[in-house]
Figure (cartoon, rainbow, N blue to C red):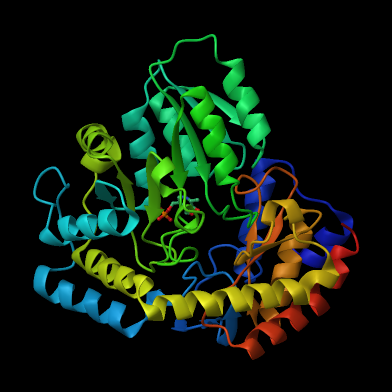
Length: 416
Ligand SMILES: Cc1ncc(COP(=O)(O)O)c(C=O)c1O
């Protein structure tokens, strides 16, 4: 095959046949042009080494730089020395170490719920929790852009699924009303707090009102909100002072907390119900000692003055980047999504997948590594380049990257 991305982007000619697409992907992978599965050879936060060159990383979910924080790394090393590299057992059997239990107590106390439960990944947390709480006599009402792990959990639970328009509390209320005549054992509304691709934040107060009116429970996925928002980094629910109105709060240990894992925090009754029936909790090896110790130290930092300083730097960088990119007029967020808020995630919408891939390559060649998202991470036909800010970028980094984005993307955006 002898095509290059420019040719595809100009003609809009993307192979429709699955076999041809695989061939295309292999071709671009062999020439280093495939924007997915890129191999990172070195990390020097906020830069990474790819194919022998340093790129500023605008794709990391380590929003406040904790994945390479020396204290967090030291905690992981120390726990690994003491307990080994893995637990080699499920939490149910030989995989519950004092590190897991201590982390659960720390999380529950921090976020103000009775108990917490730690899973090996955030994905497993959502899938296992929803499967444990819902059955085929239940209703799950989910934001149309909720994370894939939420949708997969609903499927596994066999609950009746209803979707409502993204961030639209009216649409949620109407959906709940349309099911008012049916008796369900449980109705669970599930939303993200900060949407990982759109960068939008949920209108939590209005969602809570709709849930209360309908007698529905509310589960909020704070995977991207934890560590980013709130006076002690407890997420959007903490910042908006609505934590007490959230029945089940999910968090990831793999984004701002910087390691690997996930957690649920809720009442003792819900946690026991999840502990005793979440299949992804039972049938998988528990999180490594290193991951548990790293998360505990990262949470201590998040709650401290240092955490607040890091969040302020993140906010400053996010606001600056958004202002600098304003002339491109491309972010998906509508002003009413954001309100007075800021978001570390700035999506840039392009017209098609080939143009997205080509633009990604041009940015990488110019030393800026953003992450592309295509279907099913975003709706079909709405590919984006996801620009993600961290506290570790200097003001100079932000300004230089904004210049590169503006210069390199004008060609691709002309066609949007
Ligand atoms: C909103 C949301 N929820 C859950 C997850 C899964 O978390 P983890 O990456 O820790 O498995 C992700 C990760 O992409 C996410 O963005």
